[in-house]
Image 1 (tube, rainbow, N blue to C red):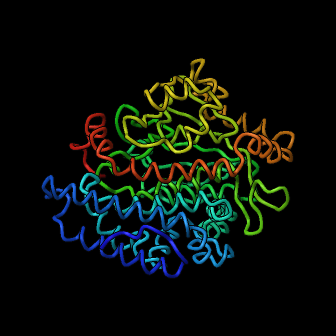
Image 2: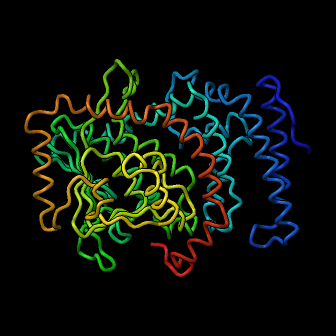
Length: 442
């Protein structure tokens, strides 16, 4: 069946394009699984996928707003991105993959996937590129998660909530968010994301604190065994073995990272709105050992960064074959364009106790002094009250990164990262630079 080359009204296009995508999917299913395809069959599969994705682009260029409005009741209902992509599959069959289709592919190693989740990237990119729809989706991702609201009474009563992969602890006027993945140097993956976001929600929602602290737990592997490290970024073993879904990237950066930067929204107001009540607090990060990849990205949304004297920062995106979140947007503001490009595109390692490191880190201390340094900075930020803290950090943010700039960046990111995530180059990079073939999934 030939792909539709034009667009018309929404209802008829849904029918026409869905029939075509169903036929394309059936064609692809007739071919052997990806590892068993001949060269000719592999090319045929790529041609089928390419034409179907081009058709999705045409459909969404005409109807992204109509799809989003139907999924959200004309933006009266808030739907998180990880749910939106599956709701779209039900509304317009073939536009995005279903849960069942993604689950079937998730059983395969990354190199053996057909990349059906790229269609999610095409869809989310189109939504974010649409101003009203994209802003509404960003708003949805800044609302507190139901799991956080359910655990808030526990935090208020006990001063601590342990979520497994993360915990939040109240110490005086500060809420400490501790990331915990000790066997993997506190790496982030599909097992850690929800816990971290709920912990960040709770830290912001806690009425008994005025500032928040992000810190890594003590790890249990390698030469850092028994020491705290902030974190090693994305779990590359999980990535190589196909255990990190594409939507994870968007859930993380539109959710937990953006909440640290912008605070928590209410249903009636966004954090950057001129009027309306939202909730944000100053954030302090403690870099112990290292902050690699995604953990380096966290530093770019902090109000104060403390670093151990022997700690370092890297953004090894080129070696991984992916885009390092919003680092390309934010890092140049700290270190300038040239150093930012060296860090992202040439794996520049930045020592915290260096001229470049001090452009990101506010203060460098001995590892043995970190606990006291954190308490001192918390005291400094709260000693004379923090009435103006939210206003000042919002003023910086509105000038440096207004929401529409963020939205436009992630419209591009959603599409490009989808293709990066399923690129053969990603597999080659992980095998060459991470010895991924020989690592065990843990």
